[in-house]
Structure formats: structure tokens, C-alpha cells
Length: 248
Length: 56
Image (cartoon, rainbow over all chains, first blue to last red; front, top):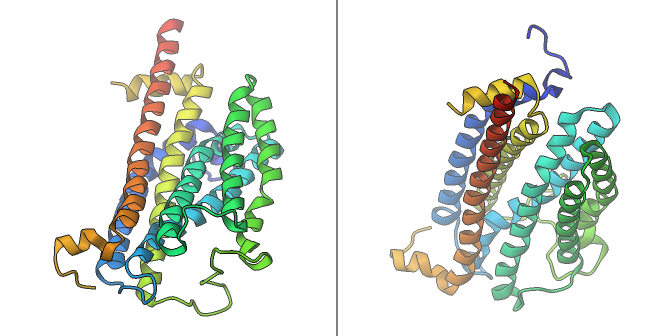
């Protein structure tokens, strides 16, 4: 490989090799950032004036929620790329993102619920943000069910792309829900235009954990994409010779 | 933030169930998911090497 093009890693064999090279770094980053975030979150950041120590759930709740939204947009993007450019690796990447996106959505809901019980007095409320995040989970699960149910992978990729793109409207709904509706869920503490309304140490821990989750998501999605590439291409030379080498 | 003792740390000021309930599930998920994904990759490679053997 002499020249690097936009399409270089569209080839499953090269994508597989790239991931193998990059993933150890991503895992290292995920772990180091998580440890730093946990240290700051539990041993530096102070107690909250109103919520006591229960607020410390924020250090995993907000990162999970952010990732759940970002991963959905990434999934829709790659599904669209695969469809528009006839790039099968892009479609495989979209399929690889879905389970991790669903997991983060579940974690956002679970951690939010465990935070809501002591602070709001309830495990669940049908407020706009919680409801739209739950719908996001259904969209992820629906995408997974849809693409798995269609035997012809190319048709499955296309159907998945339609669902992913149509469902993408839910992401801005989640984001703006606390502005558009009267919600129990609090409004934004962080914005692009104003100073954050939270203590520096709390913000730092939260941002470090977000980066950790992001590195984790890349690593696990990439591994799944490798698996999908080998599965889909198992009759090709590259997959067969790779399998011969990897399983020594 | 200084904790008086490990007991205080685990109690989280009375919110222990909620904080650790949230963190435990998160940790479990982020250990199980990579394990399952690696297994999926391993199975895919095994299937590909069977295809290799079948074609010889």
C-alpha cells in the first residue's frame, strides 16, 4: 500500500489490519482515562450541596447518554455512506455500532434511574427526555432486529440504513427535549456558548470519563466490525489466510 | 474529597445502593461486551478457516 486514499480502508482486509494496529492503543486510552476520571470523581470532587454523594452517578450517566446519541448518528452516517457509495465495510461498521449504542442507551437509562430514585423519588417518569431516550433504545434494537432478519446482507444493509436515517430525528429531540418541554429532567449544564454551571473538578471527571467511554466504544465497535468483515468475507482469500494465521 | 474510612466510601453518605448499583452494572456491561465481541471474532475466524480447509 503506497498511497493513502479516502477509500483505502474501505477494503475489509485493510480495515481489519488497521483495527489490529490501533485497538491496543484505544483500550489503553480507555482504561487510563477511566482510572483518572474515577480518581477525580471519587477522591477530588467534593460532595454536592443538595444531592450529597448520589450525584457521583453523573460521571457515568452523562457519558453514557452522550455516547448513546453520538453512536446513533455515527451508525446512521455509516449506513448512509454504505448505501450511497456502495461501500460494504461502511455498512458493516453501521451494524457493528448498533449493539454498543444500544448498550450505552440502556446504561444511560439504568444509571439515570438509579440517580432518579434518591433525588426525584422515582425510578421512572414519562418525561420528554427519558421517553425519547427509551425510544432511542427501541430504535437501536429495531435496527438490529431488522438487519438480522433479512437474509440478503445487501438488502439488509439498505433497509437498516432507511431505519437508521429516519430514526436520526430522535437525537435532536432528545437533546432539545429539556428546552421544548416542561421536564423533570434538568436542563443543560454545559453549552457551547456559556460557561459550565458545574464545579471544575466534577466537570473534569465527567469529561475524562466521556473520552474513556468514547475510546472504549471505538475499540469494541472496531472489534465487532472485524468479526463482521470476516463473517461476510469468509470465502475470500484474505479472510481464509488471516484465519489460518490468527488461529495458530 | 477525603473519606473517613472505607466504610464511609462504600456507604456514599447513605446513597451506596444507588451509586454502586449504577457503577456495578456499568462495569459488568463493559467487561461482558468486549468478551462477547472477541468471541464473535474468534468464531468468525474459525468459520473462515473451516472454509479454507473445505476448499483444499
